[in-house]
Each structure stands twice: as C-alpha cells, then as structure tokens.
Length: 407
Length: 79
Image 1 (cartoon, rainbow over the protein chains, first blue to last red):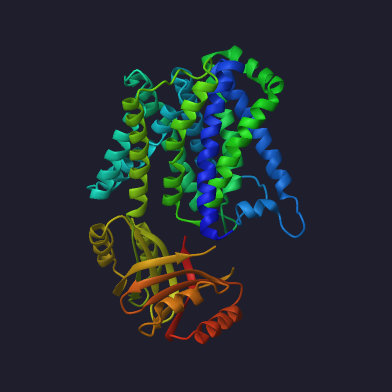
Image 2 (image 1 turned 180 degrees about the vertical axis):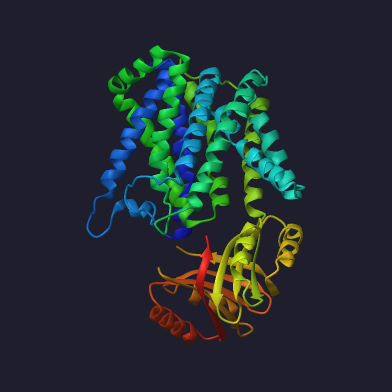
C-alpha cells in the first residue's frame, strides 16, 4: 500500500473506530452497565489489563520483526518510566481521568453520539487560545477563522432533534471534558519531546503508562463520589469482561492507528482527518436510533435540523483542516561569531516557531527548521528574536515551497 | 541512525521534477524541501555511519541535474 494511502486509511480508521466505540459506550451504558461511574472505572481496569497484555504479546519477535515496532519504530520494549517523565504522566493521567468523567456524564445526559463527538473537537480552540495567552500574541486570520468555524460548528452539530440547544451538556464539555483534555494533551506533548537513554520517548510506552495513571486517578474520583461504586466496578470488571474488553480494544485500535498515522504524516493533518469522526457520527446516530429505539433517542430529524447538524459537523472539520493547512515552513542558515555557540543554541530553541536547531559542520554553523502559521509571524516571532541573539553573525532565510517527507 | 546531515543542493534549471523524484526514493533520505533562496533543495538524511553518507552522496551525484552539493553534518541538535 502506498504510504499516502496508508496514512489516510489509518486516520479514517481511527476516526471510524472512535465513532463505533462511542456508540457502543452509549449502548453498554444504557443496557448493560447503567451507572456511568461503574462503567467508566471497570472499562479502565479492563482496558489497562488488555492493552498491557496485547502490547506484551506484540513485543515477542515474529520472524525477524517485533510487530510492536511496526506501530512505533522507536519502541524499545515495555519499560519503567523515569523520574523526569513522572510529573507529566501524573498530569496526563489526572487530565484524562477528569475528561473521561465528564465524557461519561455527557453520554449519560444526551445519549447522542454526534453531540459528544462534536463537542470534544472544541478542545482545539482551547489549545489555540492557550497558545495565544502564553505568547501574549495577536491571533492570525487563519486562527480566528478556525476558532470561529469550530465553535459555531460545535454548537450547530449539537442541536437536539427538537431544535433546542443542549446547554447543560455543552457546559460540561466546555469545562470538565475539554479542561481535562487540555491538561492531558499538553502533558503528552511534553512527554513526546523528551528523551530516555538517548532515544525519543515512544508512543506505546506513553500510552500504556497513561492508562495506569488514568485508571488510578479515575478510581480516586469514583471512590470520592460513591465508595460502593469502587467495589462494584471491580465486580463488573470480572462479570462483564468480554464486553468491556471489546470496547477497550476498539479504543486501543483507534489510539494505535492514530499513533501510526502520526509517524507517517503531519500531526495537524492527522487531527483534521480524525475530526471527520464528527461527520461520521451523524449518519451512524440516525441509523442506530432506528435500529435500537429503546437505547438511542429517537432521531427522526426534520430536514432543516438534519441540515443544521450536518453543516455543523462539516464546519468543525473544515475549521480544523484549514488550520492544519495554514503552515509556513523555512530553513535558516546561520553563521555564528566565534565562541558563542552553547547559549545561543538554547536561546534559538526557545523561539516559538523553531522546530529544530542543528549545529552543523560545513559552510554554515547552525541550520534552523522553521514551522509557523503565517508569514507575518515569521518576522515578528522569529527574525526579530534571532537578530537579538549575540552570537549570530549572519543568517539566510530560505522559504520552503514544498516539503516531501518519507518514513 | 547515528549520522545525520543536511545536504544543500543546486539543481540545473528545468530538471527539478526529475531530480526530486529520484532523490526522495534513496535510502537514508528523510525529507526533501524545495526552497527559495541560495539553494534549491534542502535534503535531510540519516545514515548509520559516515561511510554510508559517502555512498549516499555518490548516488546523489549520479543523478542528472544536480549541479552542486554542500553537505553539512549535524554535530548536535535540539531536540
């Protein structure tokens, strides 16, 4: 299969698997395990167990390769996390448990896949606004466009069949779910840039340990809510093992294909493709409400409401995609003054928009890889800061017209 | 992959498409960027040893259209 085809296949597969998993969540929480907290904790317990066992199995050599390495080539085998990684895993686990708690509350409230999937995309706005705040920066047109489209799209996609806005559910998503997700995403981002014994930290270990910490914090949350839930969850983990294992394996499949897609192509495009789960959610919701009316709420939508929800889903995907595509790349070739290298390198790394700082041997001393959202930011964020660095004698800006990456 | 390098290349006018097609498939080539400026292509490579870098440069020089290459071996990088 050609790499590009594989990339899009993995992205859409991840989106589809997430959608199916969400619909199964609704079914299981309606019919089999009515208490969302019991369901949540037991699915994490089973999920952690199943994921660890599966990854241990995939670490065994088949022929001359370890299957796990096909998912992430950086995978050195399951290992213990280091002291440096610990605080970020704690934050990521805490954030994941909070956002999952909110997720189950909303599932319980709305029983509607499309609503849940649409709202969860709003976390992209948080990331954008968060970056703006940290930089004390004015947003670019591309960012304003993306934020507006995703917000409006989210609200439209969540319109109930009766034509009302589900404000309660929206509140839970905006505060609990997206707040927790934000914490998790930022902590995971930091983990992905770290190194352990010289190698880049791999996604599989991150995922496996994230599950452990998430289960731990989720157990604490449920224990605080209702101590009986805790005992019941342990029971349910055993009695409903098969059902839970299926749902959690779907979650693992979605996550692993997402990880593999990230290894092939740009993360922003992966995000865009995966956000198509919002669009997939709508026809699936309708089909399910016809097939299982006692579980999924009646979604006999008038054509106007259907059009509004569908437009909302498309707006979300468009917003995220347009953000993904608005990218300015460049290489900067730098000649340094004698003897000013070390501090200069770390100062350059701190500049927002610099993706890689390489100290090289050749005609030039340093090559910087630039990735930023608009050409205007290239001057204000990068060139101005570069001019301030003492050690820089001269630099050449080379805009990238096209970049072809291979793995 | 222990040796990383940036190879800055100038391409003969009119042969860009063919050059890119042949370079991107070479073993060791991580990315090929078409740039505006003093060089036409910035190629990032990663190979096990310095002698492999030598072989890779040889193969690049076999490609018709390559006018000049300027290899910069990475001594240290963040991240």
